[in-house]
Image (cartoon, rainbow, N blue to C red; front, side, top):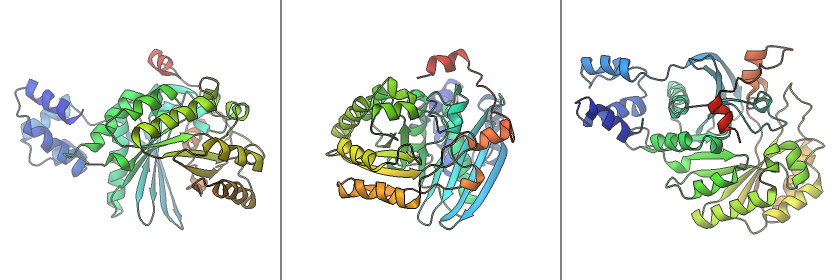
Length: 360
């Protein structure tokens, strides 16, 4: 619930609205794990809330950790009450702590290099299920003596295909009575749902937009990101230009580099041509290899050559080396391992009618 919804919920039951801010403060400011911890609430109210408004009952099916030179990476696999599995990753850096969360169980986009896409879409996550991931990772960061500073929606699923719950989640994170999480510390990633890029530009939240591009030409991008058949590169980039024009905010383009597939110098030149004049930044991400496919990262020299062509053309470019390769931190890998096991395929998606309707 948003703060306003919680106030309404309490008022309908004859309870004072001010309790809503107390509850938000405990749940998000103090990261309370149960109503029992909310000591400023009357015991009778705590008991009633536990029955009528329970916390999202995630359990942690698995957690893996890896200490890396830049900091620790923690990947959690949460299990929902209906026995679905959702991934979230917590990344510790010297200057920030980032939570990468999921918005769907599975994904409708079916990018060919992504372990999540292999299983298709099972269902959307609710707002509460997304918020619960952030809270769980914020607790995990606090236990390590750090505070969560950034949230990126780059886990399982397509945020702009689960639009309303995603926007509501951002509003809850942004609420000053709770986490007070600035929208500029939230990044929404999309594979290119063009109509909802335009919707996002009109939202009051100044979130960051990241677009998973991965190729500058239609033939190649369609092979990697089948959604390109619906909204080709030119339409997607036009939407990005409209977004920049309306918001004044820079767009980040994510480009996963795959050896022998999209790392050729001429593709870097074409990408530079397509992005020239657009307020943007390119994140080059060497492919995180998965057991599910033949995709491998290019050589270090090939990566630097690709980046150099973009930089020479005046395109702001960084190379973002993958975190947690050895703990299956790429999207969908841990879920695939947990559900399929070594040598066995991930289970087929169990699509509900609502999930099918939400598929892009």
